[in-house]
Amino acid sequence: MALAFEVKHLKFTYPSSKKTTLDDISFSVEQGKIFGLLGPSGAGKSTTQKILTKLLTGYSGEVLYFGKEVKTLGRDFYERIGVGFEAPVHFNKLTGNENLAYFSSLYKTKVDYNALMTRVGLAEAANQPVGEYSKGMKVRLNFVRALLNDPDFIFLDEPTNGLDPSNAHIVKEMIKELRDQGKTIFISTHLMGEVEQLCDQVAFIAHGHISSMASPQALKLKYGKKEITIEYAHNGKAEKQVFDMNGLAENQAFLDTLKKEEIITVHSGETTMEDIFMKVTGELHE
Amino acid sequence: MSNLWKLFKGEVFRLAKYKVLFFGVLVSAIWVLVIALVSKAEAESFIPFLIVMDDGLMAIVLLGSMFYYEKQEGIAKSLLVAPITVSQVLIAKVAAAIFSGLISVVLIFLAALIFHGLVINLFLAIIYMVLAVIAHTAIGYVIILASRDFMGMLVKYMGVILVLIAPTILVALNIIPTNLSFLAILSPTYASQLLIESIFQTTDLWKILVSVGWLLTIGGLLYPLVIRKQYQRYALEG
Image (cartoon, rainbow over the protein chains, first blue to last red):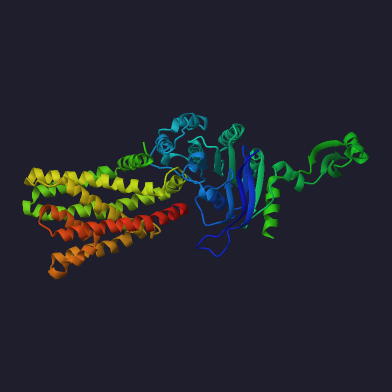
């Protein structure tokens, strides 16, 4: 699979700051995959996205989009990408449809935004001023705004932050469908549930440094414990025992527990993305 | 249809939607009433100042209010990731300010014609008004981009207005000697007023040419060298 973005030894310092915001970071985003850039607030996620979307220049290192340095790309680059900001980016006095009609008119390729509005549950509010929208509605409108030009590469900043579970589910399903259509999606987030359900690859960023990339599953295996914890009732009391996953089929104590005790719960030693986030960003800090 | 035209249409649509055009026409209606009530000679001396106030100095406030609205709404940032240039965004905004000024110039000149029979070269008046808007909006942007918020902008604006209007007052009160009055052209407000006045009265050609050149220089230098870069920085902060 081709690399949509390839970032090599990227360094960036804001002109007004003495501190390096991004310190020699490297990563790549495969075409047709969902890539998650994770990190705490102020870690450098937004700066990375601004550099990738050509909003910030003055960096050292290489940022290649399908092999071409982003700095050298013309305004046509924006015909091929879609950007969904976390904060609302719409004219409050205009309706949802008026906003979308305006932004859509600026692109050569256009999609049927009415269909997208229906899909995200905003069809009925389409002719309502955006100023009257709730936070969740504005987040969904931002998402539609990012898809107006049928982009090949989509940047999404916290795409489900502030959404109720039902609407978050719709947005996540749409993101997966976009990936299945061959589009590449770059998500910046701190919501670990989102990462686990969506991302094919993730990279952690903290204090301007980035960790090695991996799939959420691989990270869980790397940082998890290969053990099983069994909770069972023994003489009317709840007891717990931990077994090594290696050679479990031959582990007599484990088999006896299953046979003789009243099992209450069984847990694998798989760690959560939250734990991995804390651990990795902590390591990067050290 | 070019993106510049689409941006311009969008700007005018929002001016209408935000009721800025409506209030602009309302203010022009007041000027029309004033012109109807004054004598022909008073109208001739009053109209140039009126146009410069309405389309030059007020355009700065209009620009500022729209800018902070859009900054608050994150619009500027959103436009930076569309296939358009910052120059196109700025040109569309200035063109919309010119459009708004055009309505007021036409209404004022129609009033001058109807109530006093003043036949005015509208074509020349529009060109001078365009120059006034370009120079004043350029100064306006410098004030806006140097301010943190709308209130901060208003404070700076009041100071700049004093500096811009002072030459007009000093010349009118003969505080600046006649042989040195040409120095007042350094104020773009005075230069704009001189150009509009030249439609009504005989004015030295060199003064007209210097005023045109000066207004073009202000816009021609500030927009590409200062405002374009600063606008992008400011939009990203929003």
